Image (cartoon, rainbow, N blue to C red):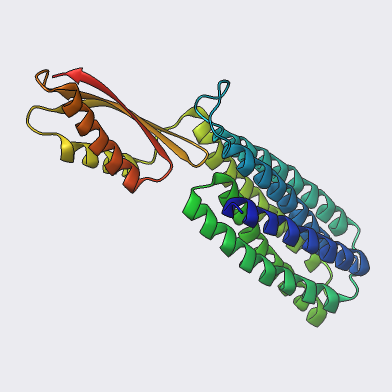
Length: 284
């Protein structure tokens, strides 16, 4: 089974389980911070489902209608996920403010504490798997999903700490304050994800460090009678697209020119996986 699809399924299963646990604990205790965590996990579940669908579609080979492949579907999914998280954060803040205005006692703190610790442990394990596969495959969707779960670890630990403080101090105002803190972290997460996912939709160039490496690879192959210019790059999902103009000696045969281009392309692809290189050959 495709690694990306397999780990995306794992994320869906873990998020579904945690939503049920958190929601049950939140209803039993009446804690808005625990319910906010359930909402956070619901957003993670939506993100996992979107990631699962997007990695399946993004790996679909290029066709007549999509000659450059379907890689950007992952970026579109990342933008959708960011907007969903943004909405959820404001809903949590709204509910927390209501709790501050009209305080309510939180009960069964022990249950909530245990559920939060379980959630943190589960998300540590799953997010690490997601990060590993996203780095291996270059998947934006899986990286976004891993980021959601990583943030969920911090917020779960934060909520658990707040529940412990409430248990010791009896100050129930801590609950909505922690919920607002969780929401602010989620807002930060959504902004970062939106920025990262949206940029490739505008065909932004690859990071400067990567462009420098590509320049160095091409320069290494350029002899005294060779130059290159108009280097361009962009990213779509987990695919990189690079093209440039290569000036060659007009006395070279077609076979010799082709061999030089093949060597440059192979070197670039050996450094950057999932990369398509287009070289426009011109006379020097």
